[in-house]
Amino acid sequence: ETNTGALGHGLSIAGGMALGLRMDKSPAKVFVLMGDGELAEGSNWEAASAASMHKLDNLLVFVDRNKLQISGPTVDVMSYEPLDERWRSFGWSVRTIDGHNIAAIINNVKDMPFEKDKPSLIIADTIKSKGLSFAEEKVNYHYWKATPEELELAENDLDLIEKELKEKIERSAGK
Image (cartoon, rainbow, N blue to C red; front, side, top):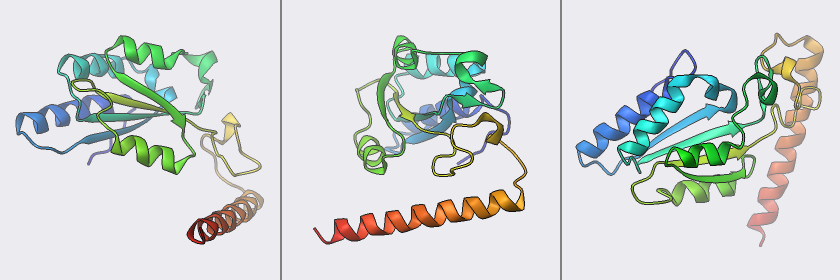
């Protein structure tokens, strides 16, 4: 487990970990979580190329594609669309899912590697700040100091989400 501090270093670190685990004949897998805005860092693409070259099929990357980054919409700052085709061109096996669908996330993690001798990538389409009525899909909420009013709104929104999830779980358990 590691954190990276500056953007763009996680994939390189993970690639080294995955290669080391393979050399040790370990069955362990390495997972990376990164945002679509982070892909503007060139070191990610060097690491993507190296992971493919070394056939690191014990490596799974999640890209949170919420289409916003600190400077604005990714399409205006540094677009890498079509993202799936770009990663495939680097030799990766790619799937796109609803990043808010927990079952889809779990099922795809269980299914990795998606292809033998290829690193796996999940593009998780998400909505930034999903569930926070005042902040959803708004770039100025990438980071901010919440006002007391915003904290109250957020608490109310999260209480509603919690209630809906509990009801959904109860309905599923009753089947």
